[in-house]
Image (cartoon, helix red, strand yellow):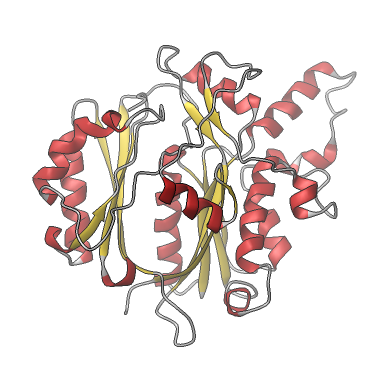
Length: 350
């Protein structure tokens, strides 16, 4: 293998703490989306991490003022690097990088500080320990400090496509030699503040389903001689398109992804398109199916079950725009190739 490889992963998700809970939830095909009775945002469904209390999961030391998205990130990193062993040796210390994708970091921290400047006796009478949490790269920074990651540290904002942006950034760090390993992933928190932002920025007739969690991959530049390889990352391809140009853009993006990866459509083991932001049934993703079939052909189950779609809980916050981003990642897990088209359309819930 000569391409970068994934050698470990971790997850804190609405299925529970740890990669075991995530794998079991996905394999069972269950949904973690609920509609809480006391949730303040109208008609909104949510997918929280069950029973996640920062002090109980991470301990009280150094977590008193930690925001939720930082705590979720730290918990995912603890699973990956908490125990002594090869993963901790490879992914910490000099030139060990961290790249985290997110929408805006901790919206709650930003809004709390802004609110305090207007409601307290003086504008500077704010809770100073919480100021770092209002900075978007706080989660990545706190995680690096906690686990002694001394290489490049970056936060990439990109809404639902942030995970792909982070993966592409991580691959560049490895290819340029700036890092010997990269922890790469995405994180979001589920708070009432973020829920209201998403609700007011979206379509009230098509409410979003919001989730939270963090997932991390350990990327290395090549297959290690002393450890397992979970997947080989062949490439990440992104594109931008205007209203009405989705199918054309998706066809182009998929074609470029296959060409750059050096694989044919017949080599694909699984194609995993993202489900719409509403968290609704798979029919939300069907309008783009003709474009996928035009490049990939009709997919048939081969050599075992094809993984079900994982509904994304990351939304966008901001005004509607007529442009959109579409991306895809191509990887080879256990010598079989998987393509993951991931649409992100600003100004739409599809």
